[in-house]
Image (tube, each protein chain N blue to C red):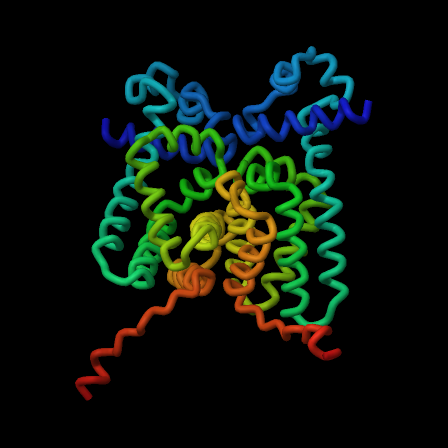
Amino acid sequence: MADGRQRFLEAAVRLFARHSVAGTSLQMIGDELGVTKAAVHHHFRSREELLTAVVEPVRVGLRSTVAAAEALRGRHVRADRALTGFVDLVLANRELLPVLQGDPGAAELLGSHPDLHDLTGRLTQLLADVEPGPTGHVRADAVLSGTACAAGPRSNHIDPAELRAVLIETGRRALALRIRKEQPRTSQLC
Amino acid sequence: MADGRQRFLEAAVRLFARHSVAGTSLQMIGDELGVTKAAVHHHFRSREELLTAVVEPVRVGLRSTVAAAEALRGRHVRADRALTGFVDLVLANRELLPVLQGDPGAAELLGSHPDLHDLTGRLTQLLADVEPGPTGHVRADAVLSGTACAAGPRSNHIDPAELRAVLIETGRRALALRIRKEQPRTSQLC
């Protein structure tokens, strides 16, 4: 029933986007898939349990991005690794992240998820460290939320590689990241 | 009863932030203020009518910002006027705008409001015009949504003038605006 579970998660994301997290019931997810509420309950005992399952890929990706960035030296290099990883995470979860971004029901549930709360705090800190004081935090918030929203449905027609490049460059500009460009190896060999 | 009406609007914004637009009923607004649903109905016949009243100050501010920017010449100057006006609008509506930003219930209702739909489209275009093609639109989306979110509750402890300056500078950087700095008049007189 792994496939069945996956179908429920995908239906949940579609309904969150349409009705918000607070406006989506397990009954509605059942209706969307033409099954009974009991069939939904077989997989998820509560909306909380369902939301935790929905965000699991984001949690795993966030953990790996944050750990990779924190392992680097230099605040600009760390911020750039965090930004790039976040853009990739957003693009891999384009239906989900713009929804979670501004949904108070999601914010409340995710805020009470200790691991996600910790990881988003560390991600924000990695970007905020580029500039001291509250300024750095405002910029980090603007970049993270702007990235998530700009990858939403209005950008569906844009080539994903182009969208990725624009989002990364916009974030780098907003944070004023100074990243030493790596020398292309081929030119050194010629 | 103008004050009564204003109290309903303020209660609505508080409840939208807590429960999303879709999750907020006229009954809940009545409960929040300790009045009957009929008393709420006396002012607003539907949730749609209430939301339209809630966003009215934003609509008026948006209209004036968009008109002022469109009256200028030069795409960088126009974008800068639009950005600055939007930051001021966000800061004057700090409880409301982060809520509307990511709420699918609000997006649906606002999208069907012809004037607001037109104004937000023109605001986005003013920022997008800085760069041709889809790139400009992605950056415009990122700046507008990032600005709205970064002015949310997490920035409540920051001095408003400092927050305004950071938001404007972050947007200018992200859009790579080239604005000719006006000479300070006092130094010319000295």
